[in-house]
Length: 152
Image (cartoon, rainbow, N blue to C red; front, side, top):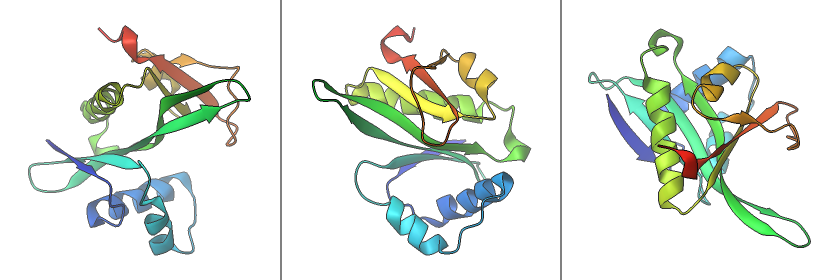
């Protein structure tokens, strides 16, 4: 498997997988091109897993995020979207994409990775993520956080 980092979300490998991902979730989108253009910019990044035959098998989309209060500010790594095609699950692709993302965050000087999930809690807890019930997410899903300094 090869892993390719992208920041252009109009890349056909990404758009095809993202459409499948949203289809699996039952989410309808009226303007796909507009959605993908909207993802471009800022520090939004993705890593795509590509099989030797060129077939894209999964992706993880992430960005550094700034949190602010009236007194504190800090940055953390935010995993926005993460998907591996059903035919390729259980082969270590997701674990590798997550590891690469955590390394990216560490190189950027970020101590924490945060995400939400309603489908893969066990996947994340087995990889060191802890539920964060005191963190509210707008999508209503459980937030999970990992201290990147505690990665062996």
